[in-house]
Image (cartoon, rainbow, N blue to C red; front, side):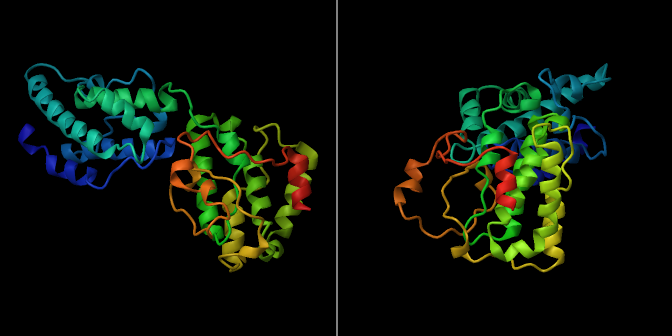
Length: 304
């Protein structure tokens, strides 16, 4: 019954939802909220649309919505579908902005004459890697440049590392995610703060043995422990939240993707031009060049 559709519930669900960046994780959260809002509007605990991870390049919301609908109910369902689509259209053009997600915003602005459902399909096909979009971020470069900042808590650093892990999970097959490299980098960076070294000694020994035996070039070989394991060690032993700033090497790289969630407090840079908004790269892949050692030998050397 079209009169029972709770459009107000849909609007309430979408109210606080914005596309916060061009990352896959934020696109997933944005799409998931839209899918949930439709379910809330219909007032039924049903699964109309696939989860973000199960989307594909031929996704067709019209076919999914009208699956099994025939006869007189089709016309009623079409009215509901169009009104839901109008709400989605307004949501897309309002909450995808150039300042937060420039790549996604470009597609929305270019194709804003499309109705809501086709516009959502276009957005997913252009931006979601699971729908065939080309990755526009070099995650391996972001992993290489992952650093613990001065005055940054290990909790915030953990969140940034987990964001990177989530990006990998949305763009790579599980067997191709370089978890050992990511975990080793996370451990190495934490070990740059002397205050954390006593808490991480055992983990460093385990990682060194693992790298000596397996190296880090085969992502199908599981890491000896996870990011969560290291974080739980520090939490469980009540490690100091923030290391002494002077004990860390200077901050030398900008990593826009990993700064999306909760930027840490960083002392003013020596050269203001390197951090001035107008000088930051417009693309997430255009990072400040940093000469850093690569390969598991370099990681082992840093862990010693």
